[in-house]
Amino acid sequence: SLSLTRLFMELVDDLLGAAVEVVTPRSGTRGSQGSLRHAAAYGVVQALIARGVVGDFRTPDIARFGFAPLYIRHVDVYDAVEQLALVLERE
Image (cartoon, rainbow, N blue to C red; front, side, top):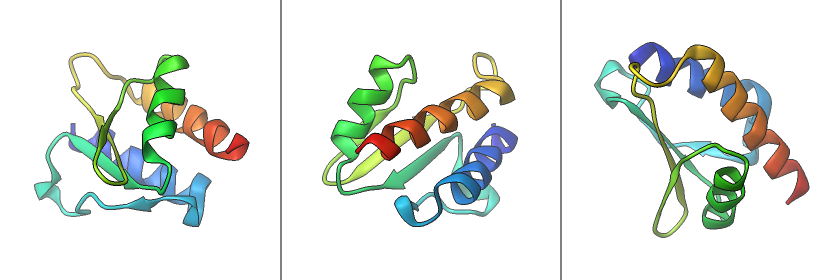
């Protein structure tokens, strides 16, 4: 799960730059989730769900994504971040 979360944060940093803020700790104590801050996080999460990427919204501006290694592969992380980039591009 740490590898999946680390990949998620690296891809977000590389592909999205300042469009979102990674608020998940970068140390190994982060657990199996990645959280991003964005002013339109609720709409972003809803658009991602419509595209098959499941996340959840936390008030006021956090989009949160879980990374369970029994169900999520590294390629799924790539696909999710690609969909996130497309959603943010259309915003």
